[in-house]
Image 1: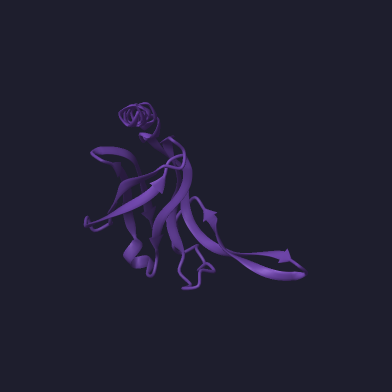
Image 2 (image 1 turned 90 degrees about the vertical axis):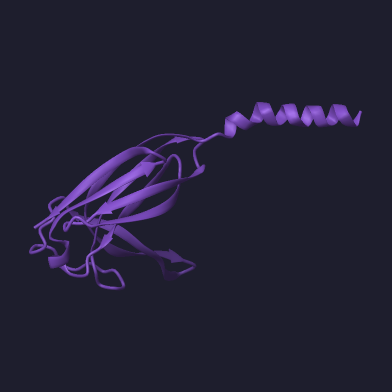
Length: 155
């Protein structure tokens, strides 16, 4: 009887296992630009409480001369993009590699854990517009496959 129970358990894992395998199909760019932060508030039990900061797009064009510093706690705006990671099962966490190619040609590589079927944000904090001037490119990789690439040209 015990051998039968073990065999049933092993067969159950074989049948269920592939259903949980991750399948990353693509990453889609939703929008990009310069973002500031807006403090969100809501009423709870007669009191106004902060619900944290929400990224607010300041415009599609990135012209440092036209941009006013946002409301982030550190006072610096962000240049970035919202994207969506396609795949299944929705919610499954996968490891991605982000490569940032700076205007001077140097690169920064980092690993990110993100959920399939979810919207996410990625970008950079601008502490000095002169340092951000030029073309910055972000690449998103899953294993050896490039899922997405987007660039920002700061004037």
